[in-house]
Amino acid sequence: MWTIYLCSALVAAVPLVAVTLHRLFPYLRADILYVRDLAWFLLKFARRRAAFFALDRFLEQAAARPNNPFVVFDDDVYTFASTDQKSNRVANALLAHPRYAAGDPVALFVPNEPAFMLTWLALAKLGSPVALLNSNIRNKSLLHCFGCSGAKALIAAAELKEAVEDVLPSLKEQGVLVLLMVQSCDTPGIESFSDKVDRASDAAIPSSLRAHITYKSPAVYIYTSGTTGLPKAAVVNQSRLLIALAVLSANGVFPSDVIYLNLPLYHTAGFFLGFIGAIETGSTIILKRKFSASQFWDDCRKHNVTVVQYIGEVMRYLCSTPKRENDKDHKVRLAIGNGIRAEISREFLNRFGNIQIKEFYASTEGNVGFINYAGKIGALGRVNFVHRKLFPYSLVKYDTECDEVVRDANGLCIEVPKGETGLLVSKITNIAPFVGYAQNEEQTERKRLRDVLKKGDLYFNSGDLMRIDKDNFIYFQDRVGDTFRWKGENVATTEVSDILTLTDCLKEANVYGVQVPGHEGRIGMATVTVKEGARFDGSQIYNHVVSYLPAYARPRFLRIKDTVELTGTFKQMKVKLVEENFDPGRIEDPLYILDDEHKSYVPLTAQVHSAITAGTMKL
Ligand SMILES: *[C@@H]1O[C@H](CO)[C@@H](O)[C@H](O)[C@H]1NC(C)=O
Ligand SMILES: *[C@@H]1O[C@H](CO)[C@@H](O)[C@H](O)[C@H]1NC(C)=O
Image (cartoon, rainbow, N blue to C red; front, side, top):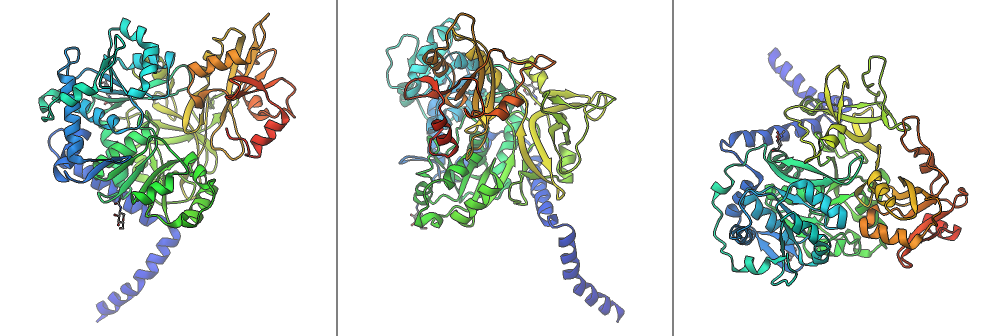
């Protein structure tokens, strides 16, 4: 009899316990679901006995759903089967070329278009690592990026012909095979490629050609602006690509989903999350050449888009478009990305309806990532016991003035308490390796941090300042050191300053980012000194900057001083300059603004300054 009482008491207690648990641990359910999904994913891979790579997953999908659309671009539809066949053609055309051998590293210089994906798949079938060149870079930067990948061939899109011609003498000297996606080409040293692809067979590529690939083989090189110098090629090994496969599926994206991909494919977000992620889920990608706020929702309606990718800037631009009646008329249910501010995220939800926003954090070369699986507005992830065991990370005290970690009397870093901002560092282990940069041991070493919590330990320095709140949610605060972020791109201040000081009239340049009301990130500004006996020549500096730097990295404001101040450790003083911003009302030094219309740096007037702060002048 008492068992019945006990049972009914227990049954009665269940909701009570559930409610209490929910009070005490409001995110327990989300935590459990997350750990379950993670375990499920790991199990799925553990069950496969043979070596299995991202390409193999694509081949599985091509066999399982041949007629489903995989990529839609303008009015062209590429099914899984036709993507497979077309990439076979590209691969066979390469294989037939006497100057290419399967496995040779190749650089891809192609903007967002299906050819990017077809060529990448073709090269994966041939076992070639691929350097994903930023299609905005030119001249010296282009040569540098090409060079550090060790690539033997360059495949470029038709529209980038001029950029290739600019660096052709140097490519020829290095004996590089240069292929352009056109039917014919009369520039000596550049071969047409599209005609060869059209004539090639679409027969499958024997897997023996990629038999040398292991999980440790480099799969792609992705370029990142680091703390100093020109962009660096982060090596992404095959094992890392497998992790990239998981991100969309772990966020509940299904084969029936339609993903809107408008971020560059040569960056982590577009390539890993959009392209590789959709290979795992078997979804359809609506590929866009670039982001357009005015077309965004019309595209989503036209293609029945269900999942969109974003960076903070995208969300802000969407919110600043004029309101329309049909703002809530779409099928988008999920937005995945990073960098959205809490206030923008509220505005976005109010305006565009019930869309689940999932923030995540991952750097191209870093060894820890977060997903905001509990959906807390503004956070990018959550501290989770299992996750932290797998990827031991910590937030440590950072001195932004001197640009270095703070160490205690024993020479160790100091963990910050909850609620305080610190530098994210994460332990380098076998599951969380830091592969480093191609052919750049010095830069690789700079991202390693030793003696963090114990003598002799080794961590990866993310360069990102974060904060953890009392509910264990993690928030992005700022980037440290010599980089800032503008229009979703990292800008390396030393790279910009090296370029500025190559002009005839400038002696020194101290480059930093300044905040502009209504914008994410920071826009470039430089405090410069003029060479003795020289005159500040705005149009000469303009021409130089435009030919060496992509638009997002060009310093928008110049401030002229007699000297550049240095810190005790001979680093340039930035903090004060950043605070002083670009206000001609506060600064007595001459100020200039980059003016694309007059192709020069022209004096920054009070009117222009107020137009910028009021948001009436676009930057
Ligand atoms: C990544 O690839 C490089 C080059 O093949 C290799 O030396 C390194 O050991 C690999 N690292 C990991 C963690 O797989
Ligand atoms: C979008 O969905 C509607 C209604 O479900 C359907 O009629 C239309 O054909 C779909 N459009 C596309 C491009 O799939």
